[in-house]
Image (spheres, helix red, strand yellow):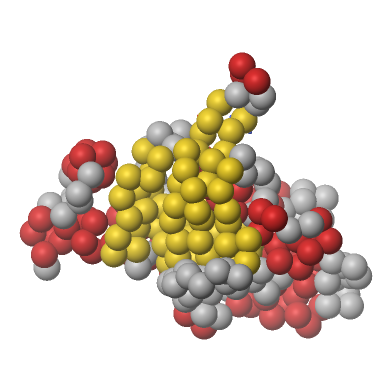
Length: 263
Ligand SMILES: Nc1ncnc2c1ncn2[C@@H]1O[C@H](COP(=O)(O)OP(=O)(O)OP(=O)(O)O)[C@@H](O)[C@H]1O
């Protein structure tokens, strides 16, 4: 165990795809972290490696080098059997809820499976399923419907409910509102914020929308071509970015003038 101020820490993480001469390094020695109960915003242009970090954190992409620490415990070194329990403590919700929701499972079955992977019976877990659906402001009747029978915003709510039903300590939200209309986006974000507070979740919030990131995050980390160039309290980074890349990124959003940040 390593003592760290972070609930979740990423240390010198390198991720590459392919092998030999075809290998392509997508993340190069990235170090970042988020304190318990806080939200870390992760920003960077398209292709900078944000989703790759998210997937590496939940073990979808193996680390070529570096460590991912949860409460000081290195997840990259765990054996398969140990990994199962630990993985439940960190859940990923991504932009496309179809990626996290099985199209052949009803919302109720998906949530029941999250609660109890061994006996994923929606009827057995009906009360819990209904409670989770209500938590994300959906009607209990949603339990019997399939992902394609919901709107994009509703699907995203079910994906959030499914992830939270697992009982995670850390939620990694990867562009979860990008595909939604502005009004639905606000609803999902408000819901997420309420849940984060009530469940004292630690969150990694990935988005290309700098306004949304500023709204939800305590700290922000800036990724540029697979390298982390800056991290700090969100207000400081937005008000006085140190790295030229961060300055360029913020300058590309016209609403971020100094007056607004100073207010
Ligand atoms: N499974 C994969 N195999 C090969 N290359 C990949 C794979 N996944 C991602 N990449 C590459 O890694 C780089 C970073 O991709 P990633 O999806 O992490 O970026 P991102 O910052 O999340 O982008 P966006 O904002 O567009 O989602 C891209 O160049 C992408 O093509």
